[in-house]
Length: 489
Image (tube, rainbow, N blue to C red; front, side, top):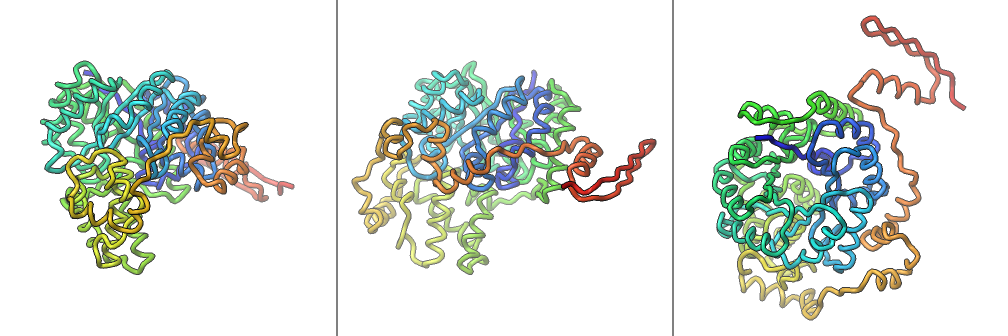
């Protein structure tokens, strides 16, 4: 059997470990090398990457896609988004999401992943249709969780509905919290394969509990041929399993992994260089923690909860918040703890801990969940909780609200953007004007960064670009370099 790899380094790797702060310049020098590896797909963009580009990095995310696509002409690029919220927790018009899909494909994305965390496939039917019409490959994840509801039979039934209605080209198990076990793989994968027929099944997990590499090994034994990995230092910890570890295990199990090992080594060296140069953390192996199975909060969100509590002088009460999250999750019918539900539940839990009074106040997003505007929950919501929330003043103001569905033309006219390009319109529709203005003002995007897989050349390039005068002597083996620099006007 041949095992294929999807490289998540440029998306989920730095999202999990670097708070999505990898710049386009950090990527570009090594992208041609990544293109040589032989990956099945380079996973590049998600809703969070767009948000980080505009809000923090002041980079045009559409330009990032175009630059990476030009640098990797031989490998398909992938992008994904949440079904209705795109970059936020509100429900945006279908026309906006469909335009988003069209522009992803037009800018260079070949595979579109549509995440529907409640497995309510009616929510994404229009987006799936747009993906196919745009010429991209449609991939749908089955979001994995542990609960009394999410049995193998539950996932098999959702898969059966998925194949009957949307018929995606690819399906994958998305274990965002890193909680799938090798034992569960042995029962879940065959149950899904029985419903998928010839449609390929992939596995995506995180190393949050340390079990993901073992789960990958079991999946390979069951015929799962495509696995999602990242290269160190952007592997392990809250990220995906290390590409090196997965390749080693696959080959020792007798499977063929047809990739360029030297190119992967170079990719890893480059990002080790970037991590050292920028002071970024490097993924580490983690200890097994059974509490992860109770609260199921993604690793990257723990730091956000700590920050929220720290602002209120309650940093020592994180354990209490996590316990409250576990309690809320049961009351809400076991939503899967991925965006947006992990954030919505986390915020509600902080409110409970801060006020000491459960459900005395709530958020707009909690009201939307209780009204099932995001979709039907996996199990019925506790009626007492639902009644309490919907009786609050902030809920009564929304009892008759339904998400509006204007056309793109109507939205452009309303925003005074009738003559604006679709790419800029989407950014302005989804992000604050202040952030978009600052991003546009920052153009052209900086793409200048040394290649870290050749340290000597990176050093020489850095010295040449340093405008300060100086004298440099460098020797290694039989190589001697002497440079004298004058001050640059």
